[in-house]
Length: 310
Image: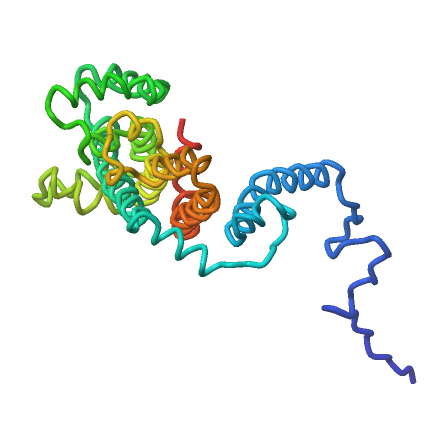
């Protein structure tokens, strides 16, 4: 009488896997060392980061020093930090004129950037959606405006505003800041990629007018592009120096950039202004850094959407 042996079950699951040889990855392919191109890329990015961050670090360190330590100590390390004293000196000097410059910069950059973004969105959306004679000509004129340097327009604008009595007023800086040719270009590219024609047609069938469609649907759909345009315009207006220099003669209407230049030019006669200028420069970059940190995710998505659309 023969005795049958039970069939042997083959191992399954983790027990069925053969042990990985040394130098193998989980998928069975051999491990590779770090590619030299990756090392070179990381090294180049590190050098670039240091190149851009080192001046900011020096500004941070220098803003904590006294006027004597500013020139008599090592520039890249702290020496008897005086944070609160230096900041109070910046804000209290000349009856608190730095406060005026700060509010002026916020006014020019905030309102000017918001209005420029809204106008750029409307113009870009119209160029992307509506078909009319001369549309491409208008768009090419906008592209020409991108290539035209703003400094070349400062003197003609001053002569124009002088004729209408707006020189040395807030409007002389605000009105030119409301125009953003690059914003129009970016908004058109984004609208062509992100605003579906079917959504617009459905809204029209439901009885919505063009202004309602733009205010309720288009603005929400184009939010990443709008944030990107606003960020670029805000930074550009905040750092603008030549236009306020040409347009304004009252130092109480100056933005921070122009005001700090007046302190620097007077530092030869009043040495304490060297430290005040550095402290004011450090304070002036804080709003820009905050805007970058808060809006960077919208900024990246807006740039990506604009770059992939031909």
